[in-house]
Structure formats: structure tokens, C-alpha cells
Image 1 (cartoon, helix red, strand yellow):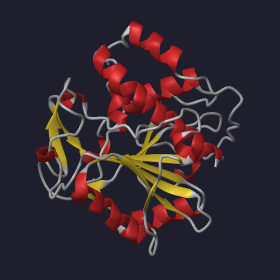
Image 2 (cartoon, rainbow, N blue to C red; image 1 turned 30 degrees about the vertical axis):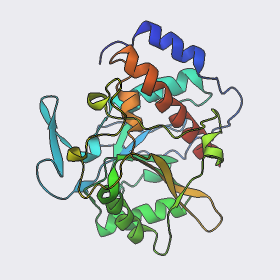
Image 3 (tube, rainbow, N blue to C red; image 1 turned 120 degrees about the horizontal axis):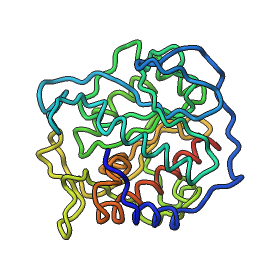
Length: 280
């Protein structure tokens, strides 16, 4: 990882508000299970938890080549995005966050110790029966799922098919900009579209190219937060669609222009989501 740009870091610290005393975080129940990297979760910190899943297809579908190696879809932006986000959460909020993110399958026996789980790039995702059942149980027990970085109609349909199995009979909604999740800490008046760093160009818009995504893409120009709720209206699943919030975290040190125009917006969304999820 490149060191954070010193000017950019100072500007973020100055611009983002501290959340002091605004949140009482109850630690999850201790369970002595290590994740795939041998990390044992403790009960005195929030652990950002990335979900590992399987995808269908071959090259440029289930996996892709970037930066000198092959990546599975589930690991897009991992772990640097979570590491940077954890650092900023510790600096700028009252939430104590482990600097080491977890990666877990939905069937991991200690999944319930993570109050919030994160999935990325789900356009080709395929869940097994046991994973569907495990996610349904996790959400019914109060868990919160955030899905990020998937674009267009076909990639949305991939998530929608999975959710039809996980939450049968539930319909997704688009959260209006008046929803509290947009105003929990920061007042976000427009949902930001964050492109991957390689596609962020001055004066060229913020929508990623359609050839990088599953077809048919349809219109990818409008970012939104879509959600599934329980019968009482509690948000169980949110999806930041047509935007790549985590790339704004991952790439914060890749130039001041990207940081100023995209990373700061990504952190505002991320902090709002975390505080909202942990306080509702």
C-alpha cells in the first residue's frame, strides 16, 4: 500500500465530523472460532467481515486478471479497502474497529458474531443451499448485509435471484435520499457514484464502461441504495448499486484528485452505513 497523501489525510480529518458519544457499541458474543486467515475474533472491537462466495463462469466472469494476478469476484478491493476503512472509522468515530478484517463463508459457525457483513462484485454470484439457509438465519437474528460494487441490470438480477431464495416473498425498495441512512452522521444530499480508480478521469463522467460488467447492463448512470426490510421495516440488506464505494476506501492514497473527488464521498457513505447499522 502506498502511504496516504499527507495533505489528503489532513483534509479528510478536518472535513469529516467526529462521532463522539453518539453510539454505544455492544460487543458481539465471544466465540473462539478463527477465520480463514487464522484470526480469532474478540468481543471488544467491531470486525469488518468480508463474505467469500462462489461465482459462475470462467475468465472475466467468475474471476478476472488485474494488477498481475487473478482475482475471484468476492475478493474485489479486499483487504485494503477494509483496512483503510477501519483506520478511518477508528480516527473519526467512537466505534472501535479491528485493523484486521475477517473473511468468512456464510456457513461459518461464528458468522453471527459480526453484526454487519460485506459482499462485493456479486454479478456472477451463486449461493449454495446451505449458504442461503445460513444467510436467512443470520438476517432473521438481526444481522445486516451490505452489498457493493455491482453495476447494471444483469448484475442486479444476480443479487435479486439470490435474495428471492434467502428472503422469499420480500421485495426490494429504493431508499429515498430523505432516509435516515443518508443523514445519520453526514448529510448526503446526492447518492455518489464512485468509479473504480482506473475509470476515474477528469471530465469523463463517473459511470464505469459497460464492457467491464455483465450484460445486459441497461442504464448504469444512476447510483442508488436499494434495500430489503423485515416486517417491522428494519433494514436487513442494503445494496449500493451502480457505484463502487469500497474502491474509494481502497484507493485513497492513489492521488489527491481521486481522494478529494471520490474517497471522501465513499467514507461519508461508509460511516453513515456503519453507524446506522449498529444503532438500529
